[in-house]
Image 1: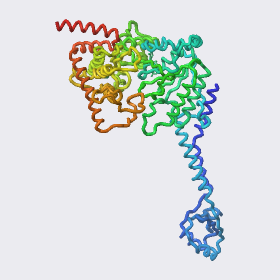
Image 2 (image 1 turned 180 degrees about the vertical axis):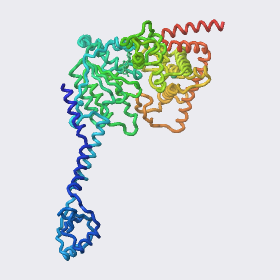
Image 3 (image 1 turned 90 degrees about the horizontal axis):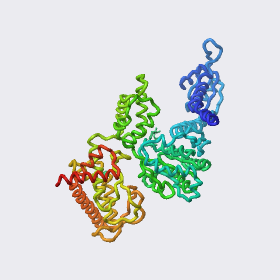
Image 4 (image 1 turned 90 degrees about the vertical axis):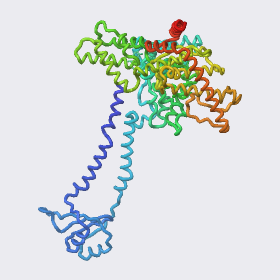
Length: 618
Ligand code: ADP
Ligand code: ZN
C-alpha cells in the first residue's frame, strides 16, 4: 500500500509538465497583446506624422519605444475612436509639432521589467527544469529532488524467494562450490563456534545467461535468507555521490536483515579497473567503487552477510576488488555441456506439456553453445509455436523450429561456431592440452572444452594448479610458454594456416618471456639484472606505461632476448607436436564429438591413442 501511494505521488509532476507551463504562458502573452486590444491599427511613423499634421490625432502616449494613441476617426459602426500604434523614431521636433496642432500627449516610461524578468529569469528556469526532467527520465528514477542520495524509496530485499537448487541445472560444479555458503547462512552460529572461515565475497564468473543470478537466488532460497539484488550499472548514475550513498544504504539495509545475501550483478560496470581510463576516469564510478570497498572491509563476515558479485569479464575488474577479504573466492559458471543442457531443458520443460516420448537428450544434442537462458527461451518458443497451432502438447517439430529461430538470432551475435571454426578450435585446444601433458613442469589438465567461454575465447583448456605458486623456476616458465604456444602451432601443423583466435595466447606468452628477461634475471645474456621498477597492476594488460630506466641499446638487447626465448619455444613445441601429430588429431576428433573432456577422460584417451599409434608404427 505504502509503495503504491508513493508511486502515485511520483506520477504527479508528470501530469503537470513544463510544457503545460510554457503553453499557458504563451497563451497569456497573446491574450494581452491581441484580445485585450482589439482593432489596433499598426501604422508607420510617417503616416503618424501625416495624421498629426492633418489634425486627425486625438491624443497619444509616448513611451521610449513606441507611440500609442487615438484618432478622431471612429471605428466602423461604433462611437469608439480608432486606436493606433507605431514604433517610435528618434524625432526631437515631435513634441513641438504636437503642441502646434494641439494634440493631447503624455510621456510614458515603459519599464522593461517584464521582458527582463521573462528572459533572464523565467525562461532560463523553464529550460533548466525541462532539461532536468529529461535527464532524470533518461538516467534515473522518476524521483524528485528530495530523494537524492536516498534509496529511491526502495527496498532492495526480496524475501521468501522460492528458487531452490532444483531450479538450477547443468552447473553442478558451481552448485557444489556454493554448498558451504548455504550451510553457513543457515546456521551462522555453528560456523562461528567452530571458528570456520567464511568468505565475504563470492564472484560468479560466466557468460551472460548462464544462470548466475538464478544461482545466487537459489543460494538465498536454499538458505532461507533475504536476497538483496542490485546491478552495478544501477549504482552508477548521473550525479556524483548518489551511487556511493546507494551502496551505503544497501549495506545498512542488509545489516539489519543479516544473515542475508547481497547480489551485485554486472560488477564490472562498477568495478572496472581504475587505471584503465586515461582520460581521467569516471569520478562517480570510482567513488561508488571506493564506497563498496569500504563497506566490504567494514563489516564482520561472521554477521552472516555474503556478497555475491557476477561478471563475465573478471579481467576487467579492479584488482582491489579481488583482494583477500573482498571477492576472494571465484566460482566459474560454465556454459553447460551436453548433459547440462539436457538437465536444464528438463527443468524448464516441467512447465509445458510435452508430447509423449519426446527426448530432451536429442534436443540438447542440437543446441551446442546454448546457455541456460537460451534453453529457457527455447522451451518457451516451442510452447508458443504449439499453442499457435492449437496443439495440446509440444512436439519435436516445434523444438526444431524454435532452435532454428534462436540460432539465427544467436548467429548474428556471433556466439556459435561453424564447422570449420569448430575444427580449428578443437585442434587448437588439443594442442594446448597435448603440450601440457608432454612437458615436465605443467599443472595437470583438468578440462578441455570447445564450449566458448567469455568474449573472444572460443574454447579453453583448464589446468588446475596442484598448489598455489609464488615461486617458479625458469624451466616451469618455459613450459608455460610452450603450453600457450601449443594451440597456435597445432593449428599451423594440421591446417597449414593460423587463425586469429590465438592472439591472447601469444600476448600472454610474450608477457612471460618479457618478465623472465626484465624482472627475474633469467636471461643468460642479460644476466642477473632487473630492468623493471615500481608497481605493476595485477593484470598485465592494465594501462600503465612502464617507465624506462635503461638505454635504447639495452632495450634492443632485451627485445632480442625476448625474441630468442619465444623462437626457441616455438621450435620446441613444433617438434613435440610433429612427433605426436596422430595423437593430436585423435584428441581433436574426440573433443569435437564430446565438446568437453575432463582430466580422467583425457588420461584414458591419451593411453588409448598412444597404444593405437604405437601399433601403427611397429
Ligand atoms: P545470468 O545472471 O548469468 O545472466 P540468469 O540467471 O539471469 O543469467 O538466467 C536467466 C534465465 O535463464 C533464468 O531465469 C533461468 O530461467 C534460465 N537459466 C539460466 N541458467 C539456468 C540453469 N543453469 N538452469 C536452469 N535455468 C537456467
Ligand atoms: Zn589458446
